[in-house]
Length: 96
View 1 (spheres, one colour):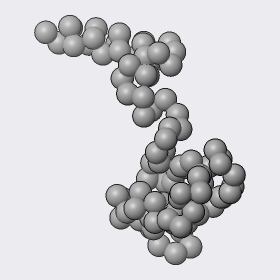
View 2 (cartoon, helix red, strand yellow):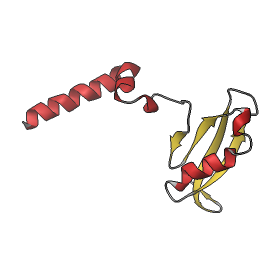
View 3 (tube, helix red, strand yellow):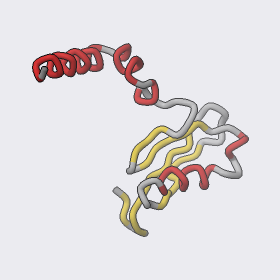
View 4 (cartoon, one colour):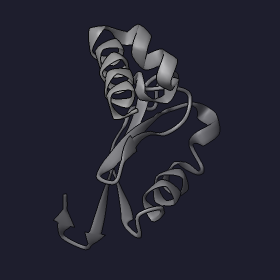
C-alpha cells in the first residue's frame, strides 16, 4: 500500500516537473498570472483595466488580509492589459 502511494506521488511529481501540461492538469491557478489576483503571503499582481481604477487598493488589501497583513501598491501601469503589483507587510516599515 505504501509503495503504491509512493509510486503515485513520484509519477505526479514527474508530470509537474516535466512540463506545464502536468501543472495545468493539477490546477491552472499555479500556471502563472491569470484573470484574478496571482500571488502569496508576500504580495502579488493582478491585471489592470479601467474598471479596477477606483478599487485597486481594496483588491490588494483584501488579498493581503487573508494572512492578517496590510497591502502596499508597488507598481501600477495604467494601460489595459498591464498589471498592478503589490506587497503584503505585517507592520509599517517591515516588508517581507
